[in-house]
Length: 283
DNA sequence: ATGGGGGCCTGCCGGC
DNA sequence: TGCCGGCAGGCCCCCA
Image 1 (cartoon, chains in turn blue, purple, red):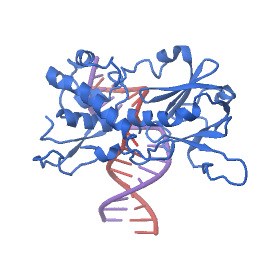
Image 2 (cartoon, chains in turn yellow, cyan, blue):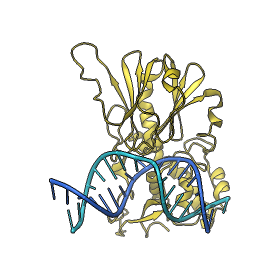
Image 3 (cartoon, rainbow, N blue to C red):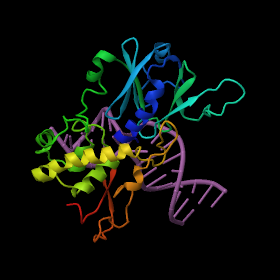
Image 4 (cartoon, rainbow, N blue to C red):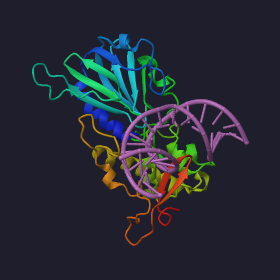
């Protein structure tokens, strides 16, 4: 699934089309995704103006007129595509209807936003804007990794005594928002920390070093337009490029990219997820 | 408190 | 060619 850089890439792609636009109507093609859709979703979206878009963690948030915000989470396989229905004989830009197009916003200017999600682990919700931050979805999410509130002091103080491995800690959205399996693997490689290392046994220096590394990786990935594995694409349909810069993710059995280290990258399972790491460079 | 496992879904890929 | 197991970017719940 899309992690923070992929969600940010989607957000940047769709914002210019959506902000200031108006929803003509919403097409809701099934009753639920991971959770049921909110009551009367289509009726509540009809004729709403889209004020602006923003992101919190891996959630895309659409601030609407009428004091409500549409929340979209892409889960593992969710995609957002923008298309345009062209009037007249030619329909080159009109999206082909796909099997898992569960939710479509038809906009006044003839653009359409399509949410496609084969595995249906995504979420769509409609929340009161004034209590957005305290809603069940967002209330327990930690600081944004690219904000100043995610800093060395916060990070080390929060986790220093945890009797958990560092992999699970970084995946915990309450500690820091938006990281997923790929970027945690990559950050741990750059920091030279084994995913199995217990947090309370890591030095203050090592733990602190993760903070700038996490920020650096996310910034790089966002500028590359995210990572495209199976199904991630920009809203325009373009691919992201950061996957070409993975040092360890998906590289089981290949040699470590550090010069003079020919150790083969290992894959282990932690908490049901694959961790990729170099046992020589990461301790 | 926390960590491990299972569940939710579909699709794809490799091996036999 | 076809079937089957394993795997996938997330998250939630239950159990020890």
